[in-house]
Image (cartoon, rainbow, N blue to C red; front, side, top):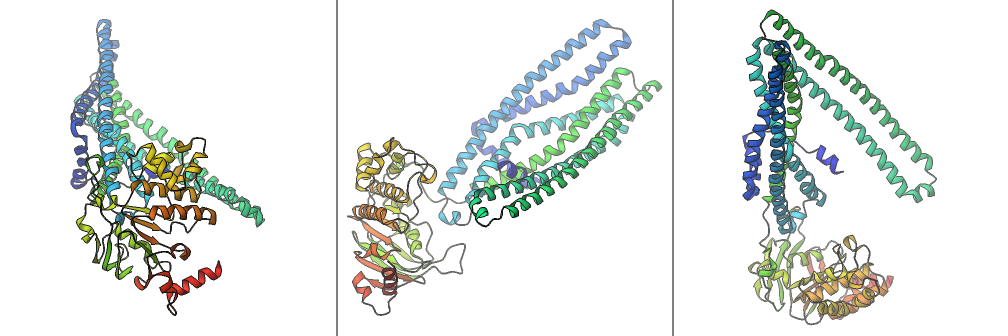
Length: 596
């Protein structure tokens, strides 16, 4: 998949504006910039030695005509010296470019991740995680390839073309003009033809990938296939796709055949034409000797190969500039005001009185939908406030606004009589804990996941939190106990076990304000009982905002708010709301308890 993405990276148009943007990458090189510029010096030296090679080869061949063995030995030694120098220069060039690139890209990766983690929830509500992952992997890989090899190779080929033409002009202007008329044209045609064939090869790969999807779907849903006796249908579907692959692959093979014929006829034909014309000019005395002719042919080969390679490298540089632009788009996103170094920041304890005053809200991506309208309520320290209502009424939005994931459209939210915007973000969130319906754990150990609420917690504190959360017994049942790996997103634990880990995490954090977002709605009755017991412990001595789906879990709440269509339509205790004639809470209650 990553390969597919990298192949399909969009290209940016190369102009002064896009290049200026791309050059911002040097800002992240910090004190490694000198390695790039020293690498450029070694690149020039590599190119110079490469250009000297054909000239010396021509001189070596001339020794046959002059029958000068001493000079031949000298030139052979000089050639070996040139090759040795080229090897040394190439080593330093590659090492320096790789060193510069890896250090710069590690700084970019870190800056990108640091900024991503600090971006507000409004950003994540509009972006897909897969797309962001691609930016960090495919785009950075493109930059890595480009800065490690492509730029250096592009410059080397460019120097070889320019230097080659200058030397060719000094050997024979006539022969150079003849070569200019055919070699670059054929080289460019070969590049275009080659690109067309690659595109065709990609078509075949895409069709093969589509056929693999059929195999995957069929085998994953094999019970359905067999239940419907649809084996014949799946076989036919796969057969049709295979036929398409064969058709495209055969056509691709024909094009590859044409390409091979083109290379043999045109490219080698060019070499024959240049050599023939060179011999004609040598016989006429317009070219000094066979050595010059050999040098000319070698320079022509260098230039032809460089023309072929430079077009592909130019396309790679376009992709890299495009990748740089996309990476900087993310780096330029405005992060939340968060201090990344927790060690320098201590959380001030707040009491936990919460007040919503005339709060209205709509999501930035859906401005036409008013999620909350004129919401007013207060929760005093130690109270349990439950929020109920139909699906989509805006219950979970209230917890998101309290955590300042989003900014309200109008009104104000107060904590201890102070506007939440006047609090430092870490201080505000540091005094809150949320136990969501779908708990996502990180792929480390149980200990690490509980300690996420307080990274510097001692083993005794972690153990005490696990006991209070009714999690200690099942953790001790695992062979590795607290060192048990929970698997990606906590897949190795059941729903009830994950919830209890989340409760232990919240207990360890010891928040002033607790948010329970439908924390027991997806559990079986046995797990729910254990989780509910743990939640009762967790809610003691703190302000609790309970977003509930199951009304049985909130009968003891100090206050129940009924949210309907973005407004609080009913407010009171369980008993008060049950007594309301035709009330929403009463209807919800009757529906749930009559079905249970």
